[in-house]
Image 1 (cartoon, rainbow, N blue to C red):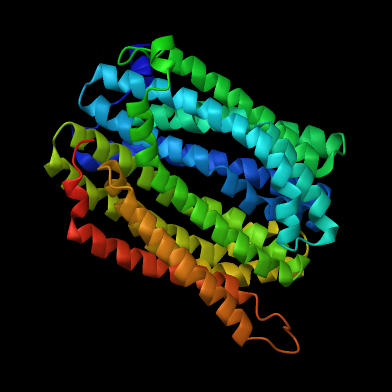
Image 2 (image 1 turned 180 degrees about the vertical axis):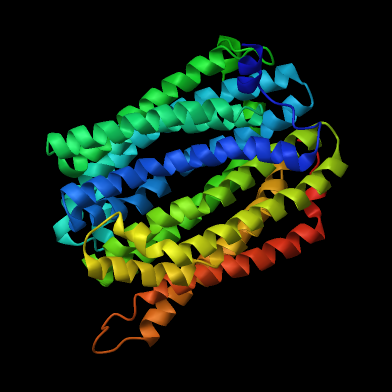
Length: 459
């Protein structure tokens, strides 16, 4: 029983072999991220199989707008994870308590804002993006339902950030696995049995996310050995709110920039027709799984660096950076090889349409090598964020997304126009993404070696 309690307790990453601590922390996060991706993948598989390829395209077309309006929570979550990690590493109970309380209050305000704004702007944005008439109603329904039930998603993600900062990546994993299983069961009931179509997928997702949020709140209420949680701590303290937003805003803006670029590129994708839209959805679902190790190690490196900087152990930060990055690159290389060998079978899970499977495999092969570059970017950016330098990763993302990806995508499409491809070749979408990832990795290495992040020190 003691071992079980220890497994779910906050973990100190400032002691022991760096590579071992990083792996111990990253593996539950990796499994959790895979489970999180199963939310979207289950939605896609079930609507693709039971409703059709257009329904699959509708769920995918809604994603960029959904991601854009969720940046508030990304910012709060990243800021929370950095502050909690550093204060936990420094054993500062009062600052840790205020940080957690402010996170809970800011999340409530952000959730209410999204619940009001989201449903109002959903359809106008979809129209602006030239979403095909055949899928725009489904897209609108999906987004509206998701935004109204946003609180569950918000609190689970924010509280996961808090738990990660405390070194507890196991609890969030368990809650997410339970929630994912519930989501899949509800998907099948709502879509396959009750024929609710795309709205059924949205209802299943928000119910499952709400359940995971409740479990996370209960866990936090029972984990007060290191912090206090009362009405005083929930007050929107100006100092802590400002610090949290200052640290988290660059990451939120990075996500916003990425989402805006996705929206702009989605407009280009829509011009290629429903087949390419559906192929893009399938690729992005597989891409979500392929990218999970990179995101997991990036988040693990943020907590690891944060705790060790809080404990004033820069030598461990240096060692952990090298060891963590090497592990992440090794895993991404393996995934790239598997995608190249088994890609066709993966795409076949989503649809029986041979033309759609072949198109998806062709596009996925363009992207595959880029995952190795992203392993480097995510690991080094994670360390910089853990040190409190959230601006540098933001500027790199801004450059590679806005000045590299979007112009290259439209440029290649324009230059490849022909009678067979009046709006250009659809490969332009994926070639531009590969180039932005590769250039991003090179720039990240350069800025990391410059070492300005080391000057940020303790927040």
